[in-house]
Length: 376
Ligand code: SAH
Ligand code: SF4
Image (cartoon, rainbow, N blue to C red; front, side):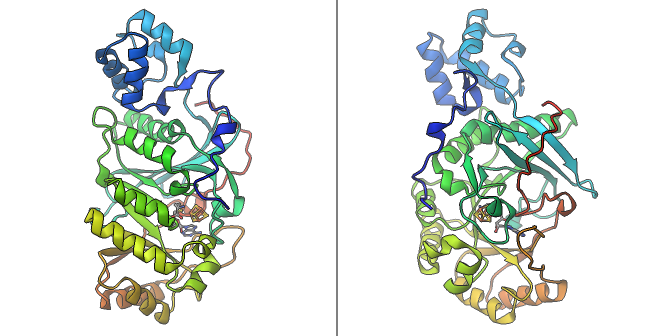
């Protein structure tokens, strides 16, 4: 496994017959492109507003543009939506999972959730939340994760990451609702697709566009140490979640293969560096698996590991996947785990279970190759 070096995208044509995806472009890139065609900022502003204010679905739906600019855009760019291959609602009505098709017949999953609760849990509580993918599949191979079980397919482009948010934002708007939170916790490891993910997030935060506040965006990583340091050095303003799951290297390696490459000592150094440099807390995720990583001894170990750090733990009772036969920790053991963490001064939240019946819960995302096509 090579981290951050293989691009994959170099060999895949993600254009539409040579026409680039408008959602791939940052505001500055769009401005430069239009400037090269002889159009001022004024026109870039208009196009940007159509893309992210109006959520326009075609250049033809941008009536205020000069016809010559429209023609150029149609010739050189496209804004094809990701194709909806499947949309399923969970029985509680709180979650909708989409299987979205990409240009090369790969597919990804995107999950829309409605949460109630408090902001400070880092669980993006509040109004509508979208959980987006950054890769098709994942190279990291965490044993309990359906995406890990399917293996790595490819990185997503910025436009494919942004496109998932636009897709959901359009639906919400049609219902008179709006998108509040974005969590990069869908398929894939965002820091393994660092550049494309950062470009996408900057597009999503752009104050002239969707203007999603950085505090409403959470990136979750399996613990890619160089990526965490880079986030700190580049002063990326969104929230960071780190998937920990175990407090000893031996236990962690059994669940999360990248732990071999980045041992806990290095991971904790990177986390402390991030907290110090950014002045921000980190949300640590811990998938609770009965008898594996949920005993009082293990709770004390994580307490000792994180004591004194500005940390919050999100505890996620294991969601079922076909490739792993562990069981979720039950209520009493979860509460006991939390109580021990509290003794070390560590706040924790048990993540609300959402969409388990439609495989839309954490770690349940995987693409079965389905051929139904309902159109966008
Ligand atoms: N690759 C990133 C983000 C995607 S996974 C990461 O690993 O952090 C999002 C979260 O779901 C991670 O904390 C992951 O450990 C957790 N997860 C994966 N499989 C799970 C499962 N079967 N049950 C519960 N949580 C799971
Ligand atoms: Fe990849 Fe995250 Fe799943 Fe691990 S838990 S396989 S890093 S998506």
